[in-house]
Image: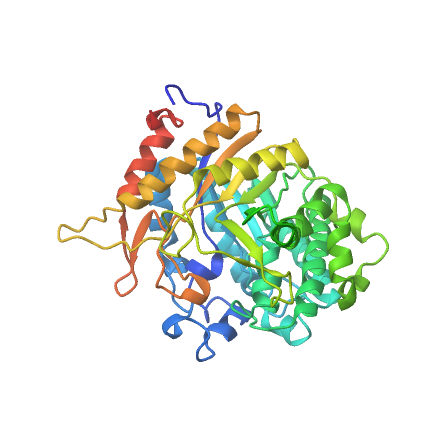
Length: 449
């Protein structure tokens, strides 16, 4: 790049999630969430790690926001905790939580940093899981009420709203694979959860629009770049089904108001989609103001008849990988962005999450030289620029994550942050990538060269 392809006003940001950073699990009137229960269960997380303290952002948010301001962030994506705001999943909001989030949001506004607020980043109140969780429709209805109350309480301070983060992960990692909370392994439950998460999204969109006229509402859909291992029909079919479940099962309802026919046919024997009621699809497809895309993966899929779910398996990655053994392939980001633009919508697009974990260490002089992350972001930023040059209406890029944090089932073993967290002392150290990103922001991408 000799000049920046990024448009004026491009939102360079960073993202976090409440359970991963807040801590203060038993403070401020917060109730237990499924992640409290899951991580406290022996054997569920790496080293038995929990989010009980995490980054202690609940007490240290001023320091974290000062770092965000110093970096020059134009926008910050955060989630509010359902279990903190509505500890029993129903009824009046917890006033301590409302006051806490209003103080955070007001400070962001004072600093000139736009706020993108996610209502659900996987911290379902445990009481609702005890009643059936996302596989039952009442959870979606409770979520709609929670969205209405939260929008009314915080709406004057929020710039963009995102109802649900990565519904695929919440459904299939939580209810099918069992590697995320609540840790269930039930394929039918996962499929029903997927539908009710989609319904919950639609209910939340309607609730936010009713509570905050003129609100800007979007999504945070994880999009994976999937290709067949060969031209053999079995491999092509396995890749199609993998794409159908991982991408189209959520994109098609949002933008076409229907589930993919091949997915309905494939999953028909489960009876899972008997839960679709009249009016659901129109509700799910409620108009949005922008599309948020989370992207981390490129998968090459080959047929595997022993897989009863989708009949395929992911091959080991080719080339360089992150600390999560995820393939580094910047052009995958360009491909998913172009696919979204060509096949689904011309709405403004934001990359609401993209980043990489590496083995970051503090050197003797106290610095953290994460050259691998700088290289990673450089490649993915350039790919985003190529997508813009191809006509994608990309308006912003939120790096995952501002801070090292509790990485779900992997506990504290994986570091994604621009800022290093010493979990023993809670000391914050901006990494080399943070200093590099500051320059990218200041030049609106022109520093990529």
